[in-house]
Amino acid sequence: MAVTLATPPEGAPMEVDEDLAALAIRVVERVLDRGAEAVIADDDRPGERRRKLVPADIGISATHRSMNAAIQRLLPSRLRDVRVDTPERWQGLERRVFVAVHPLSGVIKPAAFDLETGRLCVMASRHKAGLVVVTRDHVGDTLDNLITTADQAVGRPDVSGRGHFQHRSFWAQIANSGRIVAAT
Image (cartoon, rainbow, N blue to C red; front, side, top):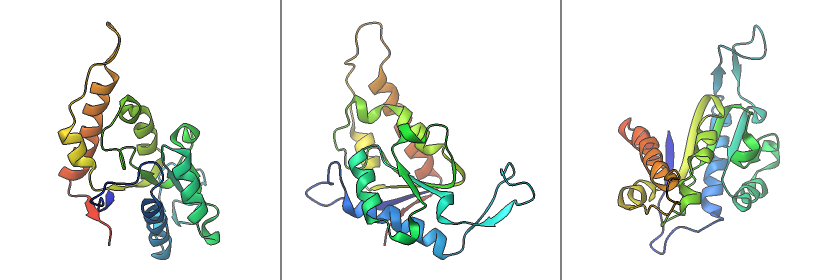
């Protein structure tokens, strides 16, 4: 599922988007306030397959440390056990529910760094039961209108083109399943 915020007419904030940070936290609060439960077949706690979620069951990630710092700063004390970190630091870790700030949120002209798929892959695979992607609403249009340039050395892989294709595929899967909602 993806939850989007409207992109302001002047464009989305570049690295630190306070409104998007607050949205990520609202998603976590809503999950917890509704008493959500997770059922995990390979749970690390034998005999306890269904359990009400607690803050330690939830993770949040954004690609820039400055955005993660903003999320951490806005996190209320009751959510201090929610882990917030970059995708690189999430390698090998999981949570029952994961909130991912889309790597292209706030990026209107994606560069190779933005289109590199490793960070998106990590963020999209750190959950055991649920994934919520939060982003500005321009991401689909940005991907549709992007014309990538092959700026790699001769004989080297086209990271930008491959990343563009994979980001579009990821976004299209969410969109085609009707799982994009506007934040209220």
